[in-house]
Length: 597
Image 1 (cartoon, rainbow, N blue to C red):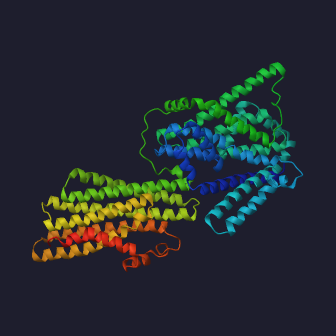
Image 2 (image 1 turned 180 degrees about the horizontal axis):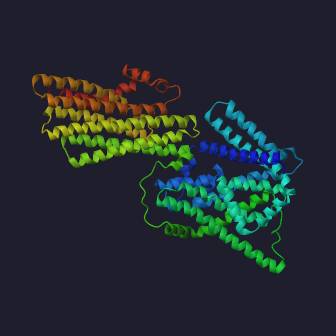
Image 3 (image 1 turned 180 degrees about the vertical axis):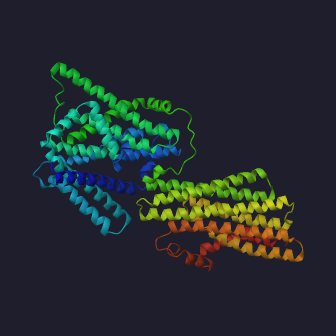
């Protein structure tokens, strides 16, 4: 084997692995998180779980990715340990689909259509179609389809090049002797596991084994232990991903390992036991020393994984109890929605980040309500809870910032990039709402500690404006949680009324100061409260605008120029806005006109 053959082999492996990675990324983008949603919802039935695991893995071509998602879901409290058993079993079946596709390399026919299905023809055609879609056509979906086709084409090209590069190995005695040594089951399993752990993909290592069949020295007794080892090696990626996770997440990773190890032990005993009996009776199993081709490897890989699932599926509850004993104790994790395992699947990572931002909004709203209650009924315990929530908000903001920056480092579609921007802006708005709520609580503390209180009229005015701001906050959180355009449209009219109330209440309070009906100390606190309340209302408006921008038609003014959109609203160009404005004006502003100054 020449130096050129070695370099060609290394390049072929690199092309093969890059093609697989590119194809998998494209498929994950096309799924846009829908496959992960299916995993969350359809896993209560063990048989449905197996089907879902096989489907998801068959589509994204990575059992490790599916299992890592399970680890992340369990770590985040989204799924229970019991729900992952079937998915992991199904993932082992789904991962065999790539080997079945690669067996097309064994096609031998004079028919031109069948010949085009061979990797040396099919790969370049797919890559050409993919690069045209990826580079020259506009449109997010077309580009992603192009990425998938390009990856699949490179997969075939890498396989074809590998077959050519390894062909000279059949004439190398040392290689033949080395490969024959793999017929030792323990050595074969060890080699299969190590190669798969190094590549972090059983699909890739099986593909390389398929390429080696072109040398004519891969027999059943050599391939069988290697394939069993490949299934064990793929567990390494999952085990690494579970480091530092909750106990149940670590149990999920161990579940994957136990399933593959136990399946290997059962088949090892069964096949080698049958060979020993057959050797004594008729000289051995008829297929034991048979030379294997790409199709045979694919069939053996599929048969082994389906067989493991059929054998161990009835004992799925026993597997759960086994891993619970291996990793003992109660699960002690905090709710970890921002699990970095989801970063490999941006659509899922964005959904988890959205959940975290919604949680921030809930904390900010709780703090606002607590701060308003402190104005009328001061309670140190309530203030302590408010301060704890504020610490949680600050911590979440830092975690989310870092998480979204890491997410941005991955290949994102235009829509996903827009969502990252929206999340960053919205989490900042919710954090600022929390800060201004703390300011309101500080004013309440000053009033309480100094033993002073607003006049009856001022208290009624404050109740009116805090009610308006509270409704704006409730609606902004609701529209963001549900991404409801209808609710988002109601926020800006309330914000406009709050601005009107602020100006009116400020004028009325200044008149009280002038007449001596209010002290300077009380007046400064009242005006400080108005400033903080109006700013909370502004940030509520910002949140609603983000939703309007994301849900409006592409050519809508709110998408192209949000400032011009706001000016148009305030000029009275929108009848719906005017109706809502008048409704909230009547609800919140009109009553204060009847209050005594």
